[in-house]
Each structure stands twice: as structure tokens, then as C-alpha cells.
Length: 174
Ligand SMILES: *[C@@H]1O[C@H](CO)[C@@H](O)[C@H](O)[C@H]1NC(C)=O
Ligand SMILES: *[C@@H]1O[C@H](CO)[C@@H](O)[C@H](O)[C@H]1NC(C)=O
Image (tube, rainbow, N blue to C red; front, top):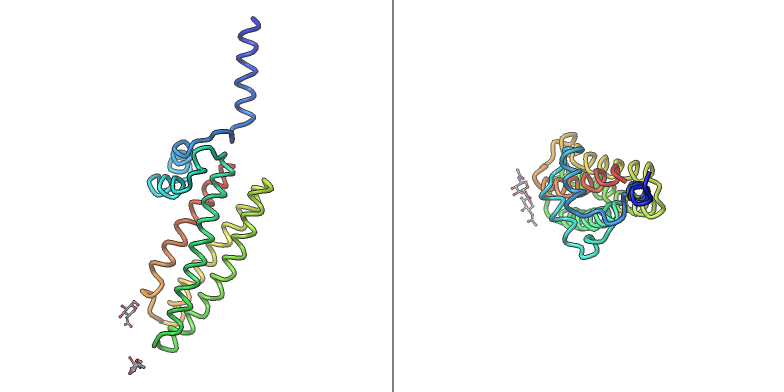
């Protein structure tokens, strides 16, 4: 083998061993859509909001999505707390109390997910991100249990689930 082709092979090898370097937002969102059945446009929109995304590795992009998810959970918690102070039925109150608990837990769990992504422990990141999705469904399901007014949190739950799902999809590509 010629030196030049050897060098070329070495470069390819190095590149393959460092797949996270310069992974572009577009590339990861295509992967999310094709391999994970995720939402390409939502992925692009969510990641590009962060200027650091253009140079981020796959883990860096998972981090961006997970941070966004944490902010979403935080604002979901604030919305739920505000709804709890309103004039609502006892059943609504019981359901919202569960939601307050699980979104509070979700914020904590997503903080753990961020730590796991930072330290490169992919499996832990996946576990935590999956757990955050369980929190969202627990909130959603409790309205069926108490026959309460689910419309109150429908959008909050849908938004939280969407960004957590994206973070999870990216984390599985780490
Ligand atoms: C709270 O809602 C109930 C039932 O809809 C209503 O009868 C009551 O007047 C409301 N109270 C306040 C303070 O708005
Ligand atoms: C349920 O909640 C939504 C949004 O808060 C509200 O617009 C609607 O009037 C509520 N429905 C009932 C039956 O209380």
C-alpha cells in the first residue's frame, strides 16, 4: 500500500473513531428521523436555537436537548402550581398535585441526565431520560384516574414529552 493511501485509511479510521466531532445538527436530526422515527423539523428547530449546536458533538447536542427539556419541565411545574391555585374541582386538584410531584421529580432526573451525558455514561443518560418521560405520562394518566379535566395540562405534557423524547433519541446515538 502506498503511503498516501495508508494515510488516507488512517484518517478514515480516526474519523470513525471520533464520530462525535463536528456532528452537525442536520446530520443528527436526519439520524433521529430515519433511525429513531423522530421529528426532523422539531429536532432542527430545538437544537439550532442554541448557537453552540453548530460545533457540538453528538453528546453536546444531547446535552442541549436535555437542558431544554429541563427548562420545559421547570416551566411545566410552574404552570401546574399556578393551576393549583385556581378555582378548580377536587379531582383536578388531586391530579395537579400528582403532576406537581412528578414534574419536580422530572427536573431532578433531568439534572441527573445532564450529569450522565457530561460524563459520557450513555446508558445512565438513557435511563434518566426514559424516566423523565414516565413522569410526563404519570401526570397525564392521573387525570384519567381521577376523571379530572385533562385539557388543563394537555399542552404542557405534550411539549415536555416532545423535548424529552428528542433528548432521548439523541442520547441513544451517543
Ligand atoms: C369556583 O367555581 C365554582 C364552580 O364552578 C363556582 O360556583 C364558584 O363561584 C367559584 N368561586 C370563585 C371564587 O370563583
Ligand atoms: C378544562 O380546562 C380547560 C383549560 O383550562 C378549560 O378551558 C375548560 O373549560 C375546562 N373544562 C371543564 C369541563 O372544566
